[in-house]
Image 1 (spheres, one colour):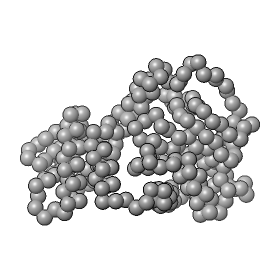
Image 2 (cartoon, helix red, strand yellow):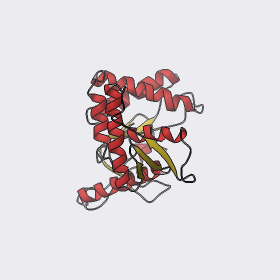
Image 3 (cartoon, helix red, strand yellow):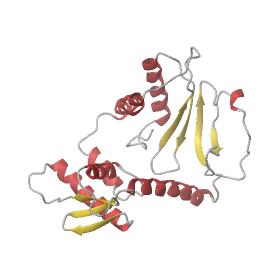
Image 4 (cartoon, one colour):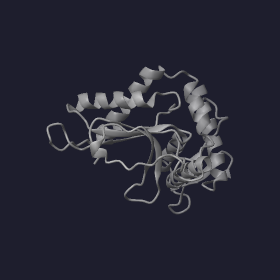
Length: 244
């Protein structure tokens, strides 16, 4: 979970409330583990849920429940914490995204145009047109257009977009994958810059835990994913159940 204003949200409370709501909707207790990440510019939470119901049957989550149901519940819980978005929240969130080296909501909006235009150079690019001076735009639409133009300028500096004339750009179709790779690299570099190594502090006591024998873990957790060499460094807390 990566809330839009993750720096304002109590992520621990959000995650526990979300799991509680999921348990009601799924009619089963859940065994889960979550890790809060605060070592990037966008605080977020990773959650792993054991795929077994309290009855012992296999727990299956539909694609719609994952993509729409969980998102809707998390959005509602964020609103309960922060209140409804003000007119300034939306533009402020987009303004903060303009210079990000990651895939943003602005990029997602630009990507929608890929479905509306034919490729102008083979299948490598799609065309985007944005004109902040266009007449008839509402204040909100004009603000979004300005953010789109500013973001396109940043993508141009990254080599992911090119200006093709007044108010027109062509964008690489694979820019989403490139931006996400840039984010992974940036997160690793930020950890290295802060601590010198991917482990946060070599002076800290290191202990290997059998998670089937513990009920809670607090502190810095160094995890090596089974399918890749890149470590994950996070502040972690554990709640009900075992980790498989």
